[in-house]
Amino acid sequence: MILLTVRWYLRYNLSFRDLVEMMEERGLSLAHTTIMRWVHQYGPELNKRIRKHLKATNDSWRVDETYIKIKGEKMYLYRAIDSEGNTIDFYLSRKRDAKAAKCFLKKALASCHATKPRSITADGDKAYPVAIRELKEEKCIPHSTPLRVKKYLNNIIEQDHRFIKKRIRNMLGLKSLQTATKMIAGLEAMHMAKKGQTL
Image (cartoon, rainbow, N blue to C red):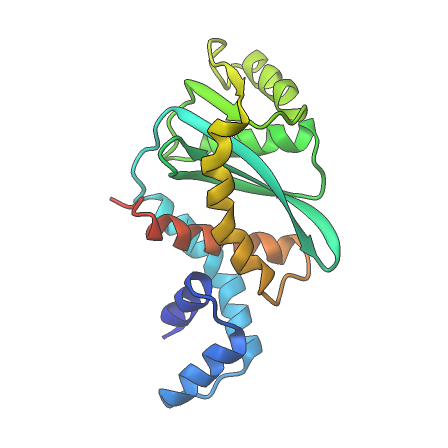
């Protein structure tokens, strides 16, 4: 029942109180804070477990960042997908700079289902050229990998942000960078499952 409740919360536009009511109909009495704790605990675990069963992405990456508000503070959600819309990884940061872009790209490169990029397409953020140059110097990315700045090619990731942003907008429990990262890990796991990325 715990897994079902967590999955419903992460996948559908339901509040914690909606789920309390749904569980009451099934004879279970739960507090909304209990469900919130489950989501914080099991969302990242879902993400970790689903990654072992993901299909390999292709080698044409699209990277972008969007902002979300956590307790009124603007934070940046970096996301990477391939040219077919398959999620590679995400990274939540307080800053939007070369250091954050580099941490994000390193995390994406370490994803077990990610194919090394043949090309990386971004929207023109000045942080990416710096981060990619440093990663090439560290031999994390092949020197032949170009960074393409073509906004129209990034439309696919802009559209992919919508599911995540729509869910985040209606969420409670995003009180800190840490809890937001846990929630987003769960959201991304359910989004990957919805897109049919599992084997």
